[in-house]
Image 1 (cartoon, rainbow over the protein chains, first blue to last red):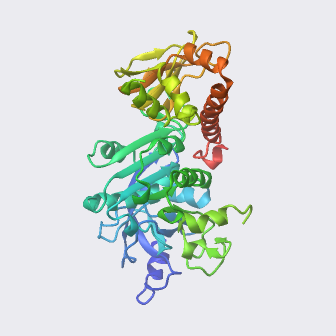
Image 2 (tube, each protein chain N blue to C red; image 1 turned 90 degrees about the vertical axis):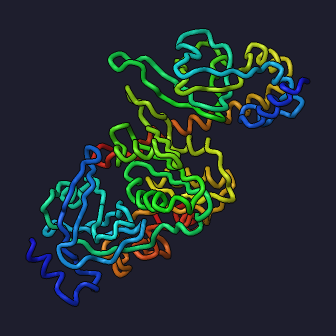
Image 3 (tube, rainbow over the protein chains, first blue to last red; image 1 turned 180 degrees about the vertical axis):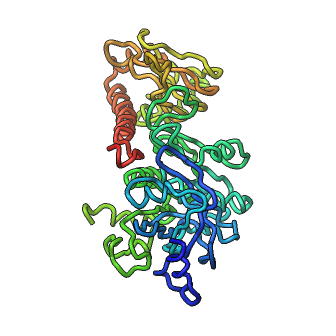
Length: 288
Length: 159
């Protein structure tokens, strides 16, 4: 496997987005019963730096390739990639089971990124549900690294139960951090849970918002994003101040194959991050 | 109307059950309301007790809980600022279905629901918009519960 991937990274091939670069798994942390975060270091030349919200195509040679959002710190600057993978199929399962020392093929980073510029000087509202928290983590880490650029920074995270939050250790640290408001809410009643019980729309609906000066970043199941966007718009936030990350069947990553088409968009290139103004009419069409 | 009642009347407008009432109608309800606060851990009511009173939460959180054999006291829903706690006074059998505890320190407006029900019974022009407002709040909570039932974050393998 190492030979196959190393060959793919021959000089001159680095710019070829269709060839995977070899990355070494340097650390694995189990997030939940079916989700793990891998830290990857380039075995050769590093891929270009990612922007928050972008994804890569990760492959286990001989098994396949899937699109996975980058969940790491955008300011790391060491060429490493941090990616959070849920075991939902053959390829993602093989990636989830990767261990330190394993080689993984990586293409990318691809797609659009969260646009944090409109939020500068304003309130930053991040709402993540389930594994949807992973692509939002770079937004939060980026905001914390430049905390003075924003007024309030608010994170609302939802999960099925207490053991199903991603980044649990870090969530505790964030909750204790001044200048960051964190609300965790679970769907299912659980003994011993000290946080909120309710769908993410509920703490969202209770927030005091400065609607003209709030930018919202939403990621999670599509229904969740739709409901959250609906609440935010009913509160007076404009659709172009709400961003969402959509998921379709990304294959090539560069807008050639068309597998990830959503109406006029190819989500691997025009997405995955879209403004709600772009996404809402497309998501309203059944089977689009 | 005292200035305190005027303030409470204005506060009522921010809660869905009272948002449809006219200022004059809200003022009548405000006369039945009083500010309350509870330290964390206070039980506001217990499952099975006669249902009397409702609370309009201003700050803090209230946990609705049920005692589940083998699991202890389980929180099924958490209410917060802007929410109304307590509907069972409105419909038979007028018993609480869950236990309510202050999850954090809570400040709220407590309403005398015996007086409120008498007021609504005697004045349908007030009772109807009041019921519509309560229905709106109840529907929002029902929808939220339905979304939770969808198990949106669950593993595709488990569905």
